[in-house]
Amino acid sequence: MGQVESSVAGAVDQGEPLFPASQPDSHAAASTTSSMESLIAEAAAYGNDENESLDARAQKALECPCIADLRNGPCGVQFSEAFLCFLKSSSEEKGSDCVHPFVALQNCIKANPNAFSEDVL
Image 1 (cartoon, rainbow, N blue to C red):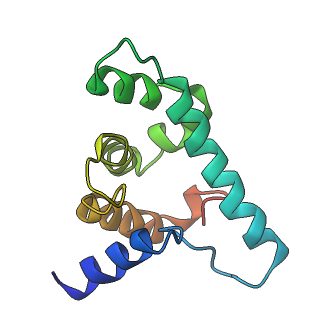
Image 2 (image 1 turned 90 degrees about the horizontal axis):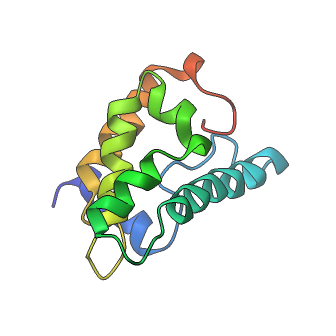
C-alpha cells in the first residue's frame, strides 16, 4: 500500500473524515464535518429499502436530491464513484477498500476549489 493509500485508509480506520476542513480549529470546520456527514447519511437513508439489492439501494441513494450539487458539479463522476464504492463497501472498516475513488475525488476538489461551498472544502 502506497503512502497516499495508507494515509486515506488510516483516516478511514480511525473514523476521521476523508476530507477534513482546511481550518480544523474553527467552529465552521466542526459544523462542516457534521453537515457533510449528515448529507451523506441522508443520502444513504434515501436509498435504504431492505427489499432491494445493494446495487439498487446504492443507486437510489446516489439519486438523493440532497447530494445533487455534488453529483452534478465538476467532480460529479469522482463523487459518484467514491460514494457508490463506500455504500457497497464490504470491508470490515467501511470504505477502506475505496481509497482510489476517494483520492481521485479529493484531488478533483482541490483542483476546483471555487466550485465548492465552504462546507465541502
